[in-house]
Length: 73
View 1 (cartoon, one colour):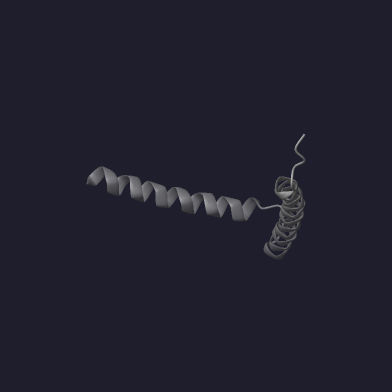
View 2 (tube, rainbow, N blue to C red):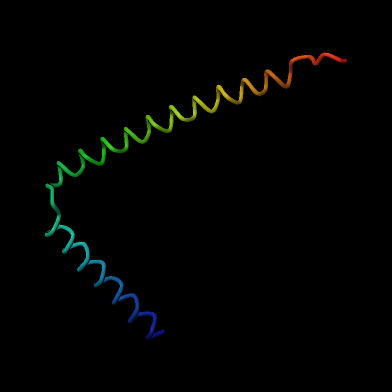
């Protein structure tokens, strides 16, 4: 039980030290960083939507080809 609490205390202190270091050494202010993250998220969302639409068109074409009656030779 003591090892668990030692680990928990160490993890908590490590997280605090890491968060403090990240805040002090961040290259951008909080507003700038949030804006950049928001822009990236929007770009990723648009890319995913475009890829999904392209894949949907491809699958619909394949489905139409499978549903089309075949000519018997």
